Structure formats: structure tokens, C-alpha cells
Amino acid sequence: MGETFLRCPLRTPRGRFLVSLPPGGEVLVATPELVGLASGQEFCIPMQEMVAVRLGAASNGKEVVGPSINENCFTVFFVQREKQECWRLGSLEFTAPPASQLAVRWVNSLQIWIHHHGRTRPRSLLVFINPVGGQKRAVEIYQRQVAPLFRLGGIYAQVVETCHANEARDCILHQDLSDFDGLVSVGGDGTFSEVMHALIDRTQRKERGLEATDIDAEVIPPRLRIGIIPAGSTDCVCFATVGINDPVTSALHIVIGDSQPLDVCSIWHAGKLLRYSVSLVGYGFYGDVVRASEKHRWMGPVRYTYAGAKAVLSNRSYAGTVEFQLARTQESSPRDQKRCRSGCLVCSESSKHLSAGGNEGTLAESENHTDGDWQQVQGRFLAVNLTSMSSACPKSPEGLSPCAHLADGTADLILVHECSTFSFLRHLSRHTNRSDQFDLPFVSVYRVRAVRFTPSKVEDHEEGEPAPQERRGLCGGICQGEPPVSCWTCDGETVSHANLSIRVHGSLIHLFARGIEQAASIR
Ligand SMILES: CCCCCCCCCCCCC/C=C/[C@@H](O)[C@H](COP(=O)(O)O)NC(=O)CCCCC
Ligand SMILES: Nc1ncnc2c1ncn2[C@@H]1O[C@H](COP(=O)(O)OP(=O)(O)O)[C@@H](O)[C@H]1O
Ligand SMILES: [Ca+2]
Image (cartoon, rainbow, N blue to C red; front, side):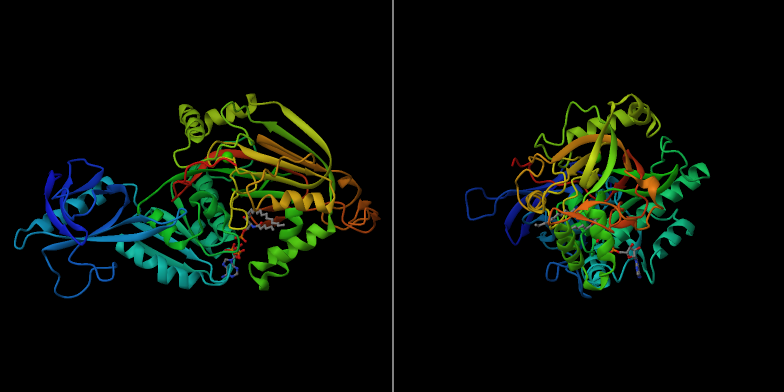
């Protein structure tokens, strides 16, 4: 049957309703049949958020099972919102009059909608599970919480449980991916990063026959979207794009085919592309924390707290020059107290500019050259942080830069100048509450398109090797024998070169997500 207008009385556990699905309708609407009597409230289910429909009654709100399916009823599975961005699988049973064939008609119509209108929904996914990330629960999380939802949504999933680092990368670079509609990373930001790198690299090789060689060159956006099932230590990319690190919520975003563009930074040293990053690119404090925490990986996620506490106490600062190209954005600034939320206007304006250029990136590239001026700040820094998204995570629910945008083609540069341990702790602690972490005299923040960092005195020693240099310690005195340079961390991976150039590529990749839905909050 085609797209007929369906409208008939049906019984549900909430009462009897007149249920309708208008042709081309976006919502299934149910109004109480007997207004004023002890019947349920009107409700509707957006078709976009319908996960599946099955003939028969649901067992425990899950799959319809059993040999004798009741052909007079059907069950609709849909996204149900719980508190704070958390989604659960809801289900509702509808019963039609006996022998009416209405249940079968409803099932057919709803399935037609899901298959034909829901074209953005993935049918086939390549899933990578990192069994050793986070608290080592990724396999169990996938099997118990995610796989049943993929099955219900009619998604074929080819699963690779990795045995070593870079297995996902090699697979993505060499496997034929033409049958897949997306990739899924089950793990932390490191696993996501491995998948994203391989996908971007593969796209450049396939489309252009080579990898990126010039910081100003266009980077071609991949065709496939990436889904993230959080099972890592920080889960920042998931948290900042979905609003929660919950496997079921992320799985539902994947099943209904949500799509969220995301800015990506490319990181260069001496004219060579080193990495891509979507969350924190940090020098000084975060570079030191991530490098030190690698030695304590056996601790699991607590390694960051341990290494973080040590780094705060050591109060190390590093000399250098930060040059940055300001973004000429009238609509937004890092301190405008506006949050990037689903359907963000700042991001969609920026995407319009991108698409107006025809080829992805073309206009953005030319804008980059004419965009704001280059500025420079020289000094000693406790931290030089760049983030193209808020970098919110469970430890810091508002993130490193709460007003940063997911897909506006800019990143926020946060400079924490040399200060006392107490002052730095004040700054850090504001990441965990709603106080403004930038409202401190030793912190400055800029919205930028590109950054260059040059450490001072790097010519006096071989990079990465310890060399004596003066620095102020916790006691305020001068300490000898400490490395004069720190290292960078890019989404939790250490980069040992200190002098880097970084550029933001607007909306380079797409995730199975829709940004944070909750209304923008004001501090
Ligand atoms: C006095 C209380 C201090 C609390 C400070 C909280 C500040 C937290 C800001 C965290 C920003 C996190 C940015 C995310 C980075 C991740 O990509 C990266 C890798 O994640 P994963 O692979 O899942 O492990 N994680 C980190 O770099 C951890 C930084 C933690 C620093 C304390
Ligand atoms: N089977 C494996 N054994 C060891 N390392 C792996 C394996 N699979 C993936 N990795 C690597 O583990 C690193 C950390 O993974 P991640 O999922 O980010 O965990 P965490 O959030 O705990 O840091 C990633 O860089 C990834 O490449
Ligand atoms: Ca951005």
C-alpha cells in the first residue's frame, strides 16, 4: 500500500484514541476518542523519532516475540526523553478491532515511512570496539545495550573487536567501505580519534590520490558519518555533541540517523600534518597531564585525576609565543554566554557560507585568508588550550569553553598565563561549576581560525630532550633541571613537538548526533 491517510480508533494501554497518520505527515497523532471522560491525554510521536514498528504485542517493552503473534495489535518503538538529554526506548501497543486487518495496514504504512522517508538512517554499519578503553566494559556495553537496538532498527552491523591499537585504522584504510553507511567507535576519545583519522586520510587518498601536504589546502569531507558509543575515560566528544555519555542515548541517535557536522583542527609541524583533533589541543598543563597519565593507564580513568593533581602542584609554566588569526565573527564570541544547541543559528550561518562556495571548504579557505588579523602574545603560560567545541565532559559539564560552537569553523584559544597554584586552582575549579573561568586577570580567550605556537629557547636544545632552564616552582623559587618545553595533547594523544601550527576546518566531519537539545542556559 502507498502513503494513504490513516485515521481510525485504536485501543492503547493509555485509553482509546483516534490515531492518525496524515499523508507525508511528520507525526503520528493520537487524540482521546472520548474527550472529558477518563481517557488519556493527546500525544504524538514524531516519525523521525520512531525506531521501529512490529506486528504483535511487545514483551517487556522490548522486541515482539513468540510464535503466535496477535495480528490485531502492533507495537511502536520510539525515542523517549528522560532527564538531561538521556534517551530511552519507549514502546506503545495499539490494538485494532478484531479481524479488521487494520493493524497490518498500520504496520505497513509506518514501515514504508521509516524506509523511504528515513533515508538518512543507516542500514549498515562497521563497528569498532576497543575492549581495553575506559573501565574495559566496551564489549559488554555494546552487546547488552547497543546491539539489540541496532537489531530492532533493522541495521546490519559488522563488528570488529580490536586486539591492538591501530587495528581500526588499518581496517578503515584498506577495507572496501562502499556497503556501509557509517562507522561506529565503541570506546573513548582515543578510539574515536583513530577512526576519524583513518576516515579523513582514506577520503583524501581516494578522492585526490594523496594525503594533505599544505595547511591551507582544502580537506575533502568524508562521506560516512561516525557514531560514538561512549566507553572511554573522558568521552568528551560524545558528551559535547550529545549532552550525555550514555550508550543507549547514542545508539538511538545512530538508529534514527541524526547528523551533526563538526569542526576539525589539523595540527602541523615543520610543514607536515601530524594529526587531526576535535576536542582539546593543549600545551603545558594538559600536555603534561596526558603525557604523565599514559604511564598510569592501568589506573583507568582515575589516571587523569592523579596526573592532574601532580601537575597542579608542580605549577609549571612554559615560555613561548602564540600567534593566532582572529575569526571575524559578529554573531558570536567566546564570552557571549550563548550556548551551541541543536539547530544552532551561528553554526548554520557558517555552513551556508561553506555551501555558497560550491565545493566544500572553498569559500572557507578564501575567508581564512581575509579573515581577522594575526595577533601575537608572548610570555610564560601555564596552559595554551585550543578547542573547536565546548569540550564538555562529565568532569566539566560546561566544558573548557562553554560558548564554543560545534560547526562554526572556529576554535577558542584559551591562554592561562603564569600564576600561583592557588590562582590556577581557582581557574580549574570553575570548570566544574557555572562560574566564568575566563573572568580572571591571568586568563584570556579568543575565537580563532588558526594558531601558531613557538616555544622560547627551543633552538638551545633538541626537542623532547631535557635541558636545564629556569622556572618558578610552587615555592616561587627558581628550579633547575626541568624540561624547558612541554608537549601537546590532541584529543588525549601526545604530540612531542612543541612548535605547531593549527588550522580549523569547518564542518569537516559528520557524527550521528544532533547537538545538545536542552535550552541554552545563562550563567
Ligand atoms: C579542582 C578540580 C579540577 C577539575 C578540572 C576539570 C577540568 C576538566 C577539563 C577537561 C577537558 C577535557 C577535554 C577532553 C579531552 C579528551 O579528548 C582526552 C582523551 O579522552 P579519552 O580518550 O576518553 O581518555 N582526555 C583528556 O585529555 C583528559 C584531561 C583531563 C585533565 C584533568
Ligand atoms: N585492543 C586494543 N589494545 C590496546 N590499545 C587499543 C586497542 N584498541 C584500541 N586501542 C587504542 O587505545 C587508545 C585509548 O583508547 P580509548 O578508547 O580512548 O580509551 P580511554 O578513553 O580509556 O583513553 C586509543 O588510542 C586506541 O587506538
Ligand atoms: Ca567550532
